[in-house]
Length: 368
Ligand SMILES: [Zn+2]
Image (cartoon, rainbow, N blue to C red; front, side):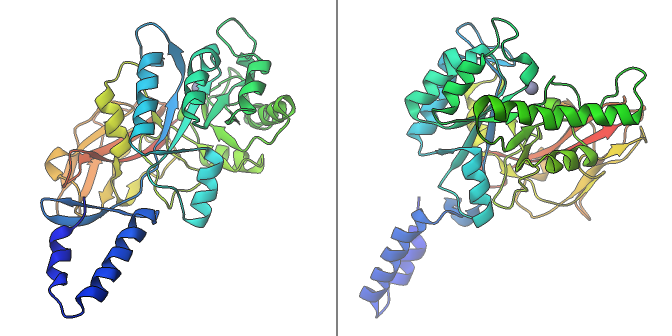
């Protein structure tokens, strides 16, 4: 859709032909520019932000889907939707390059598949090949060749030769914030260093190429862990914060959307169209370790592009009662009971003011 009304207004002009040429050239140019797509809603023309959903899958099945296992027909339906609706499925490497030079193809989407299930090769890979879609597999090395449900190194190697990248998902898929019983700080640090550094080395030897990306098991991280991953020379880090990325995304903090096997097709469309909910402040900060079990959690919302009446806040997937102050647009939640000591993905969402799609802000806090 294009802003035709506005254009026709300008056409009543003496320099008509020149203007027509000018406007036509704009029309030729706008669809090729990578930044904004202009849409009309209720006669208001507004710039819609470029969003980059990074989709995450785990297991694939011929049976009915469940949370972490998607039916392969459903997966193919989703891939077909991307192909027929002009999405540009790009690799994480292409995304990284695009973020550096500020240019991405129209409607960019990234596909990632976690853990290293056999079905990645037997079910998903043929579909990805059919559509010529790149994807990144996040492998935890201990799982490979463990049993009949896991990938083999041969299968991984074959996929890397056909458009698929490999990233590290640690050695053992451990929660990187958790200490083992009777473990002191020194031993803990040595152990998680190994999870981050050695998994990269093993993968690089096995595939004979560079491993550039790291994804946290369970989406759990802290500033110390982020620094270790950067020290290990990874170029991009993926979390599990439930929102789409924008052109100014930090390569060391890329958000991912898990596609659950028991969600509706409509929720897939919702994710592709989800916009960011802008904030000028979040509290506490992303990824920090907090000891106060009654800590006030929230954000100061920016812009006027969300429907206040539809605001919702979740902590670790559970809806919480929040307060909203319209004076300064602060949304916050303070628990009346001590919060259980664990990591929480915080999720604030509201409907976009001009569409039926959600706007979301999501980050992580660790209560320890
Ligand atoms: Zn995983």
